[in-house]
Image 1 (cartoon, each protein chain N blue to C red):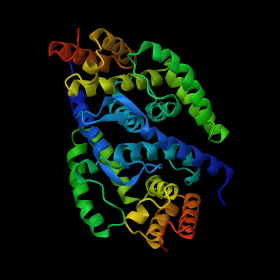
Image 2 (image 1 turned 45 degrees about the vertical axis):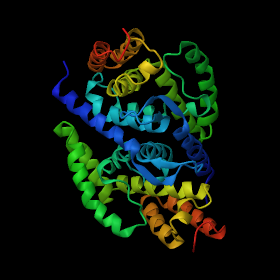
Image 3 (image 1 turned 60 degrees about the vertical axis):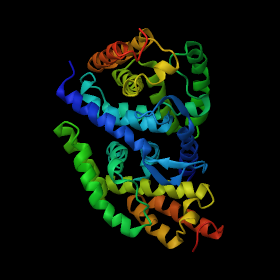
Length: 196
Length: 196
């Protein structure tokens, strides 16, 4: 006999498989194709696992990992937004809240509340965990662009000034990773892979 | 200044991006394409997060999640093996150990030891955490095949007897999920989506 709780959990499990079909702007690190949200979320979970020592002391890394696995699920309904498209980013917030209302509520209520709280915390970026999680979310595409001679920066005419606004977000979550990302931006400008 | 530790962590981070290009036999739940190991690993991490109450009491779910994020990284070198291909499964074990030696050792030693231990624990399936992790790893493709009218079962001429050997592995990690998977197998045979 499948309980009501298991039925609800399975409905959510089937729904979130769709995250594998939400395509982001940036590519894999070999440039072979654009990345999807599900593999991106796995990647960030791994980054949190191995980069944890660069978070402020006391940061709950297990919470960071679960937050990162959950953070893009709303994009099943709301789609991916390019972080350098400012108008879209503002319109996006409302669509993502509606998506969170729908998707997390497929779960039994206690679990819906828990996952929604993780997502809200990630978005608010007011705790060490959410700041570190957001830092990794911003670091990954910078790393991918660095490894693909500029990658999506050239394609979407992104400037160093715009990337540095994201580097500030990285530095707020991890000064060490912020310093490293600053170095990437400087090197990318020097090599002509990023407009000054 | 980028420390030696951060350099090693970045080398590992760049290496594991390749997991996004390791393709599994089973498809997404809409049947649109075959799945890769990275998005599969994300999916299992999410399953662990929402199905945890079906693990034996006292199971460390955070450990299950990290174990699942790590479990397929060896396939960057060793490739994916179809679980119903018995000869390949045996040859695979040696290739995976060599891959673990190479890839985890890109990390600083303490982290390499920790991730290798997680992978060894997963493979040995001797703890509640590894048995539950393996149960989810076996459940996900059964769920996907169920939702695609048999999916890879028909394609690779897999029989109910073979699937039931995996259902036993699920039941060892979670009796509730084992019972649910048994129901899927019975329904799939009844509908003609799986050979008896």
